[in-house]
Image (tube, rainbow, N blue to C red; front, side):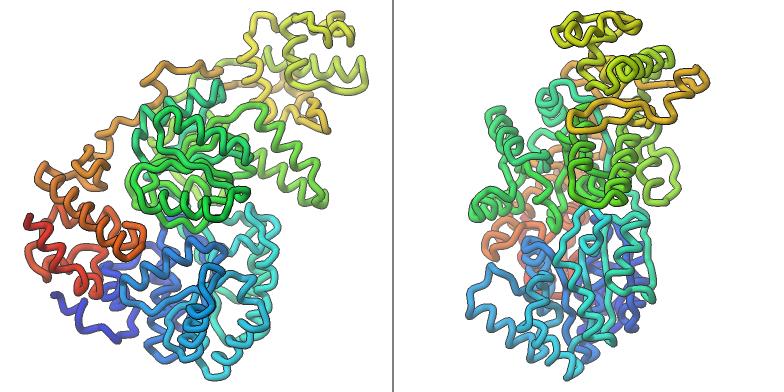
Length: 631
């Protein structure tokens, strides 16, 4: 076994810990700089994408500082699932970690508290509402008085910001920790935060003196696909069959009712789909989440209550059947796909009704007007991304202030959408909206506007006398679907806005220049429903992999013998995971198994060189792995 994995069992050097405990040869990106800052006792605010290795940024310093006699690291985490996964993974790596949450029996919780106060734990995970109780703060006081409170890591730090996409009021109380323990370094981490959210995190957590680390937000393995809604169930099923048959994935819906209806329908179509939302019984939610984490090929249909803190690395797709609230939410949710670095897809279907509903929710909310104004601007940015005809990734990264080049791995890059000069159609629509207000003093919704433009004599049209408008029938040569596309893109471009309880359409200031013919309007051609097998299908061989005997494509290209070894390793890992009551990826990621299958190490020394094989796992599993590889 290499010296770097054996002679450093008590080393406080971060690279030694990374290699000996976690089995990785080197840090990635800004991890090394973050770790150095925190090990030396400095504060930090870290923005790093999902799957970018945020947890190592506090786990390695926690081990280093504990070995130096500085005590326990407190990890503030909002979700039970994340605590369970990370504590399980740390235990597999030989690190003394625990969590305190509602899933523990009293005796077990008291045992963990004794270990905490005795300084035996390296990391303790807990939710903010528990941390801020008098009993918990008293334990922290005791640790601090004895110099055994080493570090405070605040995960999902965007939850502290009212401007963020997942504000949680209980996070506001975390400012007490700095006031109470001003000499204890703090590390705040999040995967998504625009400028407003970053500033709010700094203010609310008193991190003015913290060093800011902003990693690249690019996830090049994720392919972004956004389609116009046209029978969204059929579109979703075609996407699943064509691109992700039998793959694990998450489908997000806006309402609980839609979650349950979609899951039931998919199950009827032969998809292994389960529902998840906050209204389900807690035991049902736990069973469904466990199946998703432990079994292959499960599709979770969920509200956004599901996903944050889920570490499952082989989620091959995230699909949205409804428009998210903003780009931060979209980025965070799509980032749950492809955490293992293998190809994954972010797919979304949306239509004009989605835009209208999101605007209505903002307008009808009880927030202050400045907050509503910012939320409308964030929604507009998401609409611009959805309606873009240039590179999706360039626009997405630009939102977070990151310049990038055309990616070649989004729908617009792979199949550039056809455009048409819609200036005349736009002027007709805008003129009709203007005539509504001129005649009646108020506006009407998109459906009625399209009826007037197409010259349909509905009861509402005749009751309002709109058949006498000069704009009646001027768009009869344009299909209803095309008009909806035009209106949706005019909203996205900011020339039209939806207002009020009935989502009536009004002209924005920029509409005047369009009406005068001073501004050309180039729009995407309204997409027709593609035939099965079309629509940007990603060939299975595009990642250089094929289906293995294990039923899933390995993340590395393997020959026939390698595929058999990969299948055998997955079967062995499944047995270990069931025995330890852990998700399989906590034992070893697919990437580690694929590297073992490809390299076929024949000794413990050679196995130690596989990425992800730390000293504890080598000791615990090494002989068994060699036996499996040798057949």
